Image 1 (cartoon, rainbow, N blue to C red):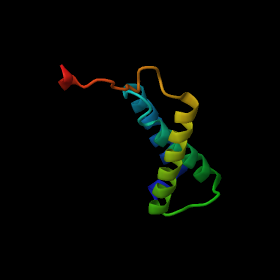
Image 2 (image 1 turned 90 degrees about the vertical axis):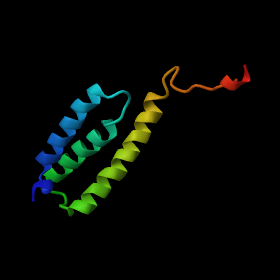
Image 3 (image 1 turned 180 degrees about the vertical axis):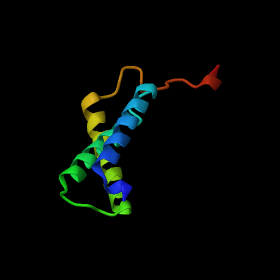
Image 4 (image 1 turned 30 degrees about the horizontal axis):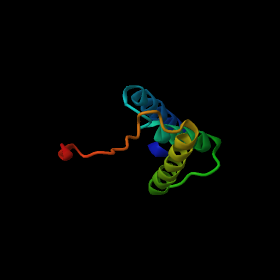
Length: 90
């Protein structure tokens, strides 16, 4: 089928990578990297899972990649704001 081709997942990764250029933050980057890695694994012929298993693997990989990116890149200055007074206190 089409989703069993590694090239399909590499193209999906490239499209998501391009979408990442227009999105604020790291919205699509984890899924793009996971799709690219899955495409490379499928091209090697290591295994060929069914579509539901493939999507679960990509979802888990993208979550882990996002956590690693968050840990490596960190939180930007001004991204987290701590409120010390309420707007209704005036």
